[in-house]
Every structure is written in C-alpha cells, then in structure tokens.
Length: 485
Image 1 (cartoon, rainbow, N blue to C red):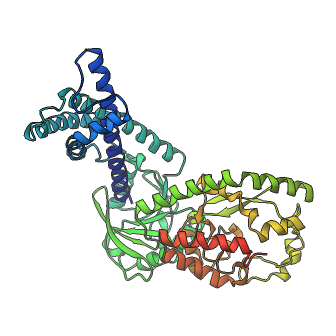
Image 2 (image 1 turned 90 degrees about the horizontal axis):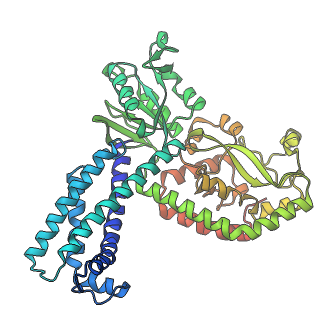
Image 3 (image 1 turned 90 degrees about the vertical axis):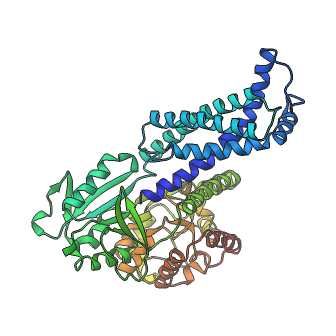
C-alpha cells in the first residue's frame, strides 16, 4: 500500500536523475567554455568548437566520465539515503544527502580519470560537472516534492481505508497513519465486533459498525482498501468479511493469516514495518498504472485538439435542431463508488428524464439498465450522435480530469449500482472508461448479466496490451456503428 508506492517513486526519481545528470554533462561543457574564455585559460582538449557538434565530439572522447558519473551518482544517492522515505523526509536532509553524493562522486570520477590516465581531461570540467549536477538535482527534488504535495491536495493521491480492529495494534496502526499525512491515506472509520463500541470514537476515528456490517459500509462510503489489524481470536470470524470485500472488488490487507480466496491475488507487503498480507482482485504494477494514466492524458489531450472542429460543428448542430443546453451532465459512479459528473453532448429533448417512467415497460435490457432501440425522447440529430458515438466526445475531459480512463468499465448511474447484486459491484474496483469490451462486442445487443461478466473478465485479465486491443477495435466499431442505438 505504501511500500509499493515508495519503490515506484524511487524508480521514477532514479530515471529522472539519470536524465538530469546526463543533461548536466552537456550544460557543464558550455559553461566551462565561458569560464575558460573569461579567465583566458586557452582552448580545451577534445573540444574543437563551441556548438552542438563540439559538444558531441567532447562527449565521444569523454564517454568514460559520462558513464562513470551516472553510475557513481546513482550509487551515492542511494548510499546517502536521498531516496529513502522521500515523501516524508525534510528537504534539508535530502539536500545534505545530495551534497555528500556530489563530493563522493567528484572524488570517484577523479579516481577514474587518474586510473585510466586521461591526462587531457579537464579537472575544471569535473568540478563544474559535479557542482552543476548537485544544483540541478536539488531543483529537481524540490519540484518533485511540490508536485507530490499538489497531487495529494488535489485528491489524486488519496486512498480511503477502513480499519477492522480497535485494539492496541490497530491503534498503533492509526497513529502511524496520522503521523504520516504525506502518505495520502484517509481513515474512513473502524470496525469492531462488540455492539457497545459502535458509534464510539477511538483515537478520533468513529467505529462505524460490526463485521457483518462491512458490505453495507462499503456501499455507503467510498472505500479503497480494508485493513484487518485484528487479534488472533478473530481469525475464525473474519474470513466471511474478507470474502465480502473480495466480492465487492475492494482490496484487503491482513496482518495475521491467509485465507483460500477464489479471485484475489495474494502478496506480502508491509506498512511502516508491520507485516501484512494483501488480497487484491485487481493486480497491476505501479508503473503499469502510471503508464495507463500517462497514456490517458496524452490520448485525451490529442483527441480534444484533433476533434475541436468536429465538436464545434456538433455544438451548432445541437443548437439548430433542439432547444436546450449543448452539454448533458449526469452523476455517475466511478472508482469504488466515487461520484462524479459525466459529460456528453445532449441527444435527448429537455426533460427526458421525466418521461422515463412512462417508457419503462418498453425497456429492452435486463437488470437495472434502461435501453430502448427507438427511444422517442431522442431528437434526429441526437440519434446521429449516438449512432456514431460522437455524443461521448466530451468524456475526454472526464479522462483529462482523472474521473475516467480511455479504457475501463462504463460508468453506471448511482440508482443502477444500488440495484447491483454483490458480485456485480466488483466492476467498480477499476476506474470507468469511455470504451470497454462490452462497447466493442455488440453493446446494446448483449444482456445485462453478460455485460457485467465481460467487465469482470476485463478486470481479471487486464494488461496494457488488452487496452491497446480494445482501443483498436473501438475505432472500427465507431466507424461502422456496430451495436449502437
């Protein structure tokens, strides 16, 4: 839960550091040229000119220094614990670690120059290179820390957790979370098996209910993870609660024992030194989710820019063919039940929801979803927008905001979620998307239960390659309007 994110952040930082140090090499080359010119130190070996070609000529002749610098910097930044507890460490401690790494790297690179007998290598360059790298790394770390704070405050980095247990170990767990607000963990409430404790507050956190109340609590609150920090005499009681979380698609952490789950993957992790066993129904590495989100931002931005002329034409078309607003906003359920407003181009007459009850007997879909092939509430141009899926273009802004992804289960209405069976709620364990397997497999020609099964199959078999395949299929489905009405 925290350790995996720290490892991921460390890997990202190391990747950025390599780029920064590599850039510093070339910056130092141009800087040294000015220094030598100012102090009239004469021309420099392996540098015939002060331009890009001269810089690459210098690089080819000093590639040993370049490679050694990156290796030594990476080693010493780790040795002096610059990456350790990065989010919670004071910036001055990080700065001191970079200063120590700069000194150690300069000495190490100097040793390489001496041992390889690179007599023409400028000592001034090594000095400037080390100073430059240190300054750029300091700036980079400050920017990254500020960005992480921004993510946390904007809610993109926050996870809501429900803690099962109220004993000393659970209280210690709460204390650790409260002392590390930078982790972005928000305790929604506690669970205890004693009726007398329900409603009370322990360390400022309310006891929301008992073990049997967990499914109900998962429906009432947005819960991303349930953490079981329970005494040994609870082991016989909590299996049903863990299986209930599994059915809902909510990941669980357990500090004591292992159960024979049917869907969840189990892995060992730790939380501030507390050993935990994690049961997760959706398994993906942090780098995969980071890549998926990066891809979402890139594709949504590019698509918005490319489709702006089309969207302007649609706006004019809606205004000319139907009275009312251009954009239709509707509350939907997202990741683990989070509520958000989904944006679509309006395809129905104003007040269409008021006529929904009159048409319910014509519903052509099973379950809580309402679909009619020839819906009288849709005006002609709106029918064209639906047939071509152009009405969903504004959802690109939902993707950009982070409420949705390009690929994922379609976002349901809250009233639909309220009517879900327990096993169907697991589809909420992944961020909703503009397109999905259901979307490219016939959409409205598929019954509701099969639709839900397809979403769960997507979650259980998720991969970046699967997302690419669905995006490719979506292009052809939209082109021919397959399954749309």
